[in-house]
Amino acid sequence: MRRSVHATAVSFLAASLLSASALGQPAPLTLPQASPKSSISQMVGLTEIAITYHRPAVNKRTVWGDLVPYDEVWRAGANENTTISFSTPVTVNGKPLPAGTYGLHMIPTKGGAWTIAFSKVNTAWGSFSYDEKEDALRVTATPKAAEFEERLSYRFDDPTEKSVTVAMNWEKVEVPFTVEVDTPSVVVASLRSQLRGLPRFGWQGWNGAAAYAMRNKVNLDEALTWVDRSISMQENFTNLRTKAGILEAKGDAKTAAELRDKAMRIATEADINQYGYQLLGAGKTDEAIEIFRKNVKDHPQSWNTYDSLAEAYERKGDKKLAAENYRKAQNMTKDPEQKKRIATVLARIGG
Image (cartoon, rainbow, N blue to C red; front, side):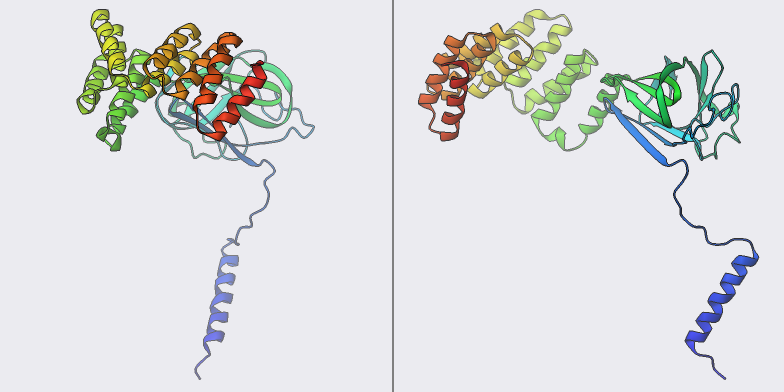
């Protein structure tokens, strides 16, 4: 007699469950973990640093020397080994470490420096299979007394464009280590790659790459070829000044001065206005005032030149000249929003 499709399916399911049970392989359940998983990341320049770990609790236990024995390798967290990844090469406490993802392990000691190990194996369960021969790097770190932390945590302190301090905190102990990045080299490598894409088709991309190298005084010969490529596409105030800065950094002050003079001769109102604000941002208020005064002289019909000059005088603390130029800008502009903004500024400075 032919069995129904339903009966056949039920029999197959029952057989499958019986088989799994007989083999001791019941379907696993997903439940909250006693030590929840966490992750944290930080950019240092263009380099991403990320840590993935599980957070055990103190739970009224003695941690150091008991739950975590001294002088034995520890997973620096709970469950799977803690991992730390670097998207570019770095140095850790002054020692080089290639880009990659590493198993992070620690060896606590009582009253002395701890060992921090970066294992090439990043998929282990805890530190049970840890082998020192698989380390990519070992460094030492000095633990510090810290405020009580119930659950283990990691954090990134004092990040800059070139470095950050990584700190493990648990119970009343903090273990910091410093990660440094050769950010200018990383950025230059990135710029080379970016200039193979869409940025290569405009003068702005080549100039931007050259300007970064100029500011950081790296790869100046290559930067000179980049800015020349920019100038060949469209010579303007911005890329002429970039080339001047590169040549000055290479010791050719005469040609640099000639290029800056040429840049000023071909500058637009917007070029000079932007340059003035760059000087203001750098704290060079008097130089900014001179630049804005030049823009007023060259473009007396523009309300914006007076507005920018007024802002520079205000920054200097000269409220009288600031108010005088704000009023000129207010009278010249046709934009009601600008008139309202300037009126607010004049009320603030007593003009």
